Image (tube, rainbow, N blue to C red; front, side):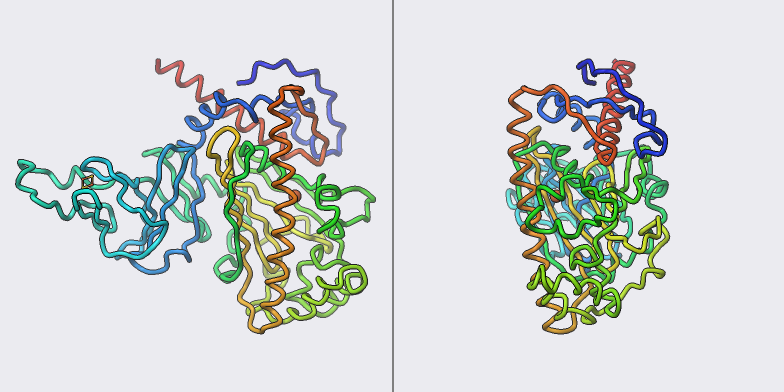
Length: 438
Ligand code: FES
Ligand SMILES: [Fe+2]
């Protein structure tokens, strides 16, 4: 979609990550997609209104009648996600069939039926119209035709996804399988404790996501918080163990400094040598982190031995593995570790505003020491996020000056490059099919 002329690529040498994907090139990528309101309109049309979007976990609505509401600005709508009497999860537009009032005002709750607060129409948990005050005055109203408008909804590994396309081009299972089939079976359902934050960051959604699909920045942006997690065996900032790019999605696996608390996530659940290793340096350099780890060791309700995790988790089988970042197109980031995972959504509101919904899931802790460890991690990860977000708002402002038309990417930023190309490809396909049907 971009009209900017990019300088010619220097081909990436063999053996590099970028060299593995020659179709992505190796040259600069344009800034325009990060700052253009018109480009965002195209993304809404061809991506966000056509693609599976993650909206929550099944554990949020465990009982019949439990529901939550998601405002999806990128789809120009708000949806209700509800568990019906049969235990199935349904999604529907939060728009009354009478005169379009929003049906649900709360963000979540439990109900037998949805009652519109304007004229009292009632709908069951499948969105069927079941009650109309003064119905006879409508002259033979066909209730079947005036239910809530359903939205395609499906579940992958406990994550609920919706798709605004009434006939999604691909099922959720087929969408996820090629890249994430080998992480199915990760114990998401045993990670029921944790914490999270929601905030609006004044930057483009891709700018936000990009900062979570490379680790080049960790040594700098996070220099005072978690940079000791960097595995310095290669004497670099944080080189990936491996990177994989698919038709839509992408993944990066990273090693960590085993002599640090944050860089050695298995220390908590494995204890023993892993914990000794983590504490050997951390006791001196990070006394509070070390105290939290000491308090928490052995307290998680479930331990997940490395060899019990699915084959796609730590797929290089590195002994120094820290975590894998899995980016589920378009805007969902899931990091997998042996004892916790992060599920971060970077959902656009406008071309330069993003609603970040960041959730961190742990197994339940069985002791006060374990809960202290979680409190420590909550504060540590909050600080890390604040470091990212404050940088991002400055980056967006700088990008909007127009001083730079392109940005350059190094090998370890391959996922940023891939993300750009996937969006460009889909927008080009969307524009071509719109031109054909016109
Ligand atoms: S708008 Fe909902 S009952 Fe009238
Ligand atoms: Fe970061």
